[in-house]
Each structure stands twice: as structure tokens, then as C-alpha cells.
Image (cartoon, rainbow, N blue to C red; front, side, top):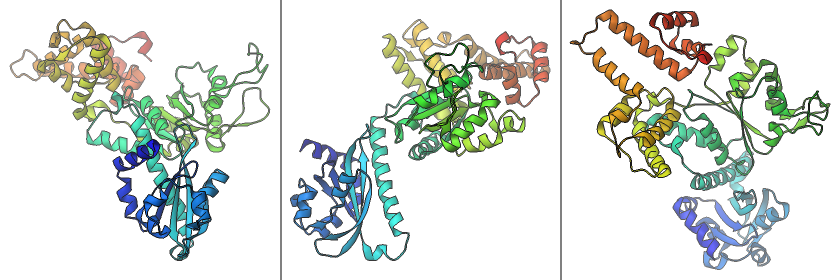
Length: 475
């Protein structure tokens, strides 16, 4: 059967056959209709028949033959849920058997796995039943995770071989399979939004909605109604039929709260209630509703500092911080710059029908650049260069002026034979540090925090050196 061959091929590539055959416990895999697909050596020995006589046979027929009784696979099909029972296998004794459903990507039953263990071993400790169910669940989670990873589109946000980034990806895999709250932190542009969606795609909720809410992009007067919705006639100007909020839209799926630090203080208690009880009340409502959602939050701010300043609820912070993930900035994963540059170069060459390539000199500047805007800045810059470069080989002159000026600045500032005095060099270093921090953090308040100085001191330095600051960023 074609489907059987596909499943067997999948198990070979994931090396699960060898793993299952080393187990003393029996593993018996059927499709959603009960047709035997595969069993390990221990299960074959228990049944007393070779695999060739079992594979392709339905468990109901085998049960009628007395190979095993009752069939836990049949019980799972009938009940539609995991089942544990005591089974008599080929008159060789009693075994504790658990059947578990493995759904496909749409949530429909695809496989049924039965795990059997000698009941004399299980009786040695009262915790053995829980251990068996937990073991089988772990098998299921591993199989599903590998299947999802095989179908996941790996974009530039998951490119990297540095130690810190590989550790991050391993943590993401572990976090994805547990259904609890996640807090992603990191600087602007490191890929927090992408990681949140990646976690969703690797989770059991991957077939349900992923709803992205940018808390800083919704006006404070509207964010409550956008999140929780409102009832008919809740306020003047409200839609007469009411409105379903984003929380309800994310039911069965994931609600991603980006820039969670910008959530108004008076709404934080309502979010806390949602986190604790999975319940919420729309504006103008008189009863609470349930939302089966997983919440992932992200921020580039230090929430603990905001808690100390009284701008963020401490109980909400600890409720969000159950599974913290910190995404490292580009300057801490220099090994990943080349792979990211070449990946994006290839992508934008294809998009814009070009054949650009980096010169060694241009690559050297890009590699030593600090990338204050992180992966997002790198992606945008490569696309810009692909479009504007004069020739197919990208030269230093094709790079933005700010990158070229950094190189010139470094060459002049550290040269002992240069024209600058010590005080002039110190001033230029300070100007460059402040300018880079402003480009990265966008506002004087965030820049001052990042530099470890007060905002008033930063403003005096900006005035002293005549550094240009956008009016929208001077806050």
C-alpha cells in the first residue's frame, strides 16, 4: 500500500524503527481504521506471529482470532480518545496496554499507537501507569514535531549556526510542544514575531488561528474593544450587531501580543484574568466567555524595570514570564552574518531578477557592522543594495553612506598619525555611540536607558554635538 510505504519511509528517516526495536515494551501502530501498519520486535514476539502475517490485517480480525483481547486500538477508535486497559496477548499473560491517537495536520486521527508492558512490572509501583501514558505521549509529541518541522518553511529568521542561536532553536522546539504562556524578549528587529509564529506552527494548535496583535499600534481608546470585543449598543457609535474581539478570533489557536509593554495599565488586570482563567468579558457584557487560547507575548523593553516603576503589574509579569525566551542581537552572533547576507542576497536576486554578488571589501564592512536594527535591518539593506547597485558586483560605493562613514571613522580615529587630538577623538567616539544608539532605539528615552544615562544628560550631549533627532523620536 502506498500510504504504508510512505509511513515506513518516514519512520526510517527519523530512525524511530531502530529505537522502537530496542524497547522491551511492545509498540503496535495502526491507521485510523485499525489496519496494522507496523509493530516492533517485542510486540511481534508477544503476538506469536511474524510481521508479514500481521501488517495489513485489521485489529478487529486479529482480536477475533484471539491474538489479543480486547484490542486497545479498537477501543480507541470507538471512544475517540486515549484508552488504557489490561490485555490478554496470545494466552501469554496479561499486559498493561495504552492506545493513543496521533492526529494529522488538520487535527483528524491519522495513526493509533498501542504500547504494551508486562503487568507484573507495572505493578511494582503505583506510578507505572502514569509513566506509561507519559512515555507514549512523548513518542507522539516527537513524531508530530518532526512532521511539522519537515513541513515548516525555514525563512531567514531561522538561519544561523552560532552557539547562542542553535541553543535558542533547541529551546523553541521544547517550548512549542507544551501548551503554556511564552514571553519572547529581544531588541527591535531580532525576529520575535517570526519566532512566535514558528512556535505556533510547531505546536498542537498549528491548524488553528495565529492572531498577531501589536499593542503599540492600536490607540489606547480602542485596544480594549479590539481585544475583547463589545456587545450590541455598548457605547455611542458602536456597531449595532456588536463585535467579536481578537481574543475570540484566536479561539483554539494562539494570541500573539507584540509590544506587550505598551498595553495600558488599566487593561493589564483584564489580561491577567484571561491568562489565569481563560475567561473574558466584552465591553457592555454581563457574562464572561471562555477562550481556549495560548498566549505568546513579546517586548523589547525590560518589563522588570517597568514593574519597579509601577508601569507594569508585577503579577502579570510573573504570569507572562513562565517560559522566557531571549533572542540574541546580531552583534552577539557574528558568525551568522555571512549566512544571512548570502541568503537574503539570493532571495532578492530572485525577486528582482538580478545577479548581484558581494565584493570582498563590501562583505568586510557588512561583517564588521554592528547591525543595530538586527535581522530586519540586514534584510532591508540587502534588498536596497540589490536594487540600487551599479554593477553586478556590489562595491563599497554601493553601500549606504552611514556604513562607509563608519569605516572611514574607524580608520581615522585609531590612526596615531591622524589629525585628531585625544579630546577630539573622544568626542567623535561619543558622537558615534550616541548616533548608533539613536538609530537602534528610535527614541531618546529608550536610547538613554540603553546607554545607562539619564534622558536629560543625553539631551545635553545631543545639543552639544548638534546631533539631528527626528521630532517624532525625541521623547
